Amino acid sequence: MSEAGYIKDKHYQFLLQYFPANKMPNRFMYLWTDTVKVIESIGLEDKVRIDEESFQMFILDYFTDIARLKDFQDIERANVDKIYGYELFWFLRRHPIQLLEGVPDNFDINEKVAIGVFLPRILVEAGLPCNKDGQSEDFRARLGDFVNLLFYNLKHRAYTQQSLELAIEAFLCGSDCNRLSK
Image 1 (cartoon, helix red, strand yellow):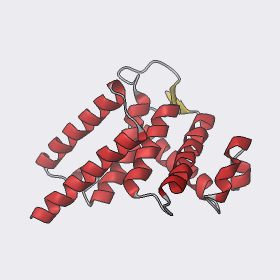
Image 2 (spheres, helix red, strand yellow):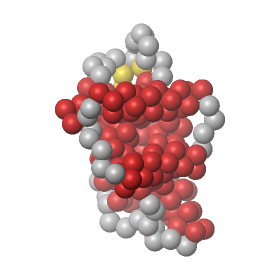
Image 3 (cartoon, helix red, strand yellow):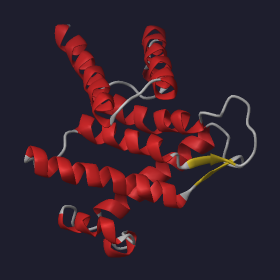
Image 4 (cartoon, one colour):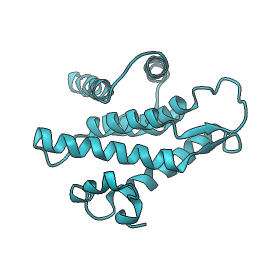
C-alpha cells in the first residue's frame, strides 16, 4: 500500500512532506506483525481482534507527534526512546486490541500486548537478552519487577508520551551505567 493510499484522512496528508517513501505503511506492517505474534504467543488469537482502523490511527497519531517534534525541536531524526515512548503511548491511547469474548484476567489486554511488543525492542536496544535462555534468575526477577511496575502504571496512573520516553531512557541509562561500571 502506498503512503497516499494509506492516509485517507485529509487532515493527515501533511505527513507526506515529513515521511517519504513507505515509512508509515511499513511501520504499520512491522508493528501489526509483532502485535499478532504477541497475541498468538499468549494464546488469545481466537478471543481478540485487532481493529485495523484504530491501529492505523495509532500509527498516524505517532507520526503526527514526531512531525511536530521535528519542527519544534529542529531535529531530523527522533531518538529511540522517543520513538518507543510515543509509539507505546499512541498504541495504548487508541486501544486497537478488542476482546471478542470474556477472557479471565485480560481486561487490560492492550497494556499486556503493548508490553509484549515494545519490551523486547527496548531490551535489544539496551543490549540485554530477550529470551529466558540468556537471562539469569536474578535478571528475570529484576525485569519482572520492572514489567509489573510498568504494567501497574499503564493501568492505574496518568502518563504521557514524554513520561514514557523518560521511563525508557531511564531503563536504557540504567542498563548502560551497569554495564559501564563493570
